[in-house]
Amino acid sequence: MVARGGGSLEDLWAFNEEVVARALCGCPVPTVSAVGHEIDVTIADYCADVRAPTPTAAAELIARVKDELSADLAQRKARLGRAIRGQLERKRGQLDKLRGRVADPRRLIGDRKLRLDRARQRLEDVLHDQLAARQQMLRALRERLQSQHPRERLHRLEREVARLEQKLKALAGRALLARRHRYEGLTARLDALSPLKVLARGYAVAFDQRGHALLQASQVQPGERVRVRLHEGELSAQVVEEKNE
Image 1 (cartoon, helix red, strand yellow):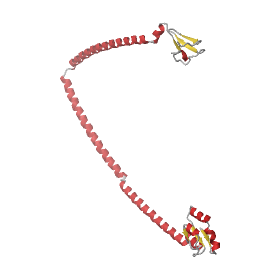
Image 2 (tube, rainbow, N blue to C red):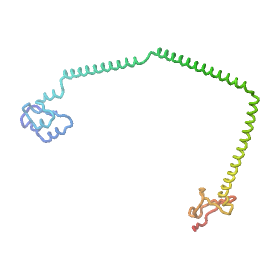
Image 3 (spheres, rainbow, N blue to C red):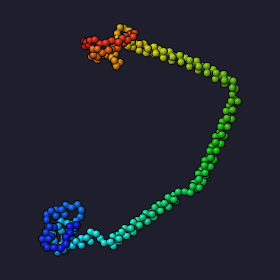
Image 4 (cartoon, helix red, strand yellow):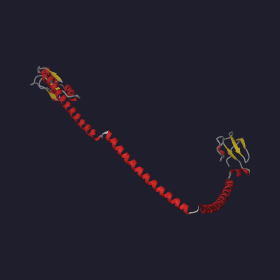
């Protein structure tokens, strides 16, 4: 708030200055101009957000009286109380609905016991029917067994077992022979491709200190040590000269 009591034109001329006008226009908060009396007009009145006729009127405009603030506070308190009571009523209604949806535990346990008794009875009926069916099947099998002599049936089974045993031996022999031929062929091919065969013809394989096989002379430098694998045993050698031919 920019305010000053009444005075002459010269006394109020400071509120016509450019710096005051720019300060009021650039102020980030709302401004009130209350310069002189109601009949006095300055540039500050045009630059401020609100013009009050007197400083007293500006003070009343900015700070309302205690009765107004008390009334506003009471009104807000009443609205808050009504909102809280309304919310409590809604929550109470929701609680009543949820309480109605929750069944009595004793009735729930009774229903579960009734369902359990019914399930037990159905299970007993199923087991009784299965037992009766098995007993009937057992009687039928006993009658079939009694109608046939077990000794003759045993002889037939022994002959069938002997026949199957001979057949199994023949199949096993042929399978074993085929596997042996295949094994011998693979062994011969593996032996032909074995690097040991190459070493047996007088060749050797050189390895560097990291154990990598040497394929080119440029892989080592004079003075380095190498390991030479022969057909029988190994040699430790030192490189004297490098030749790339």
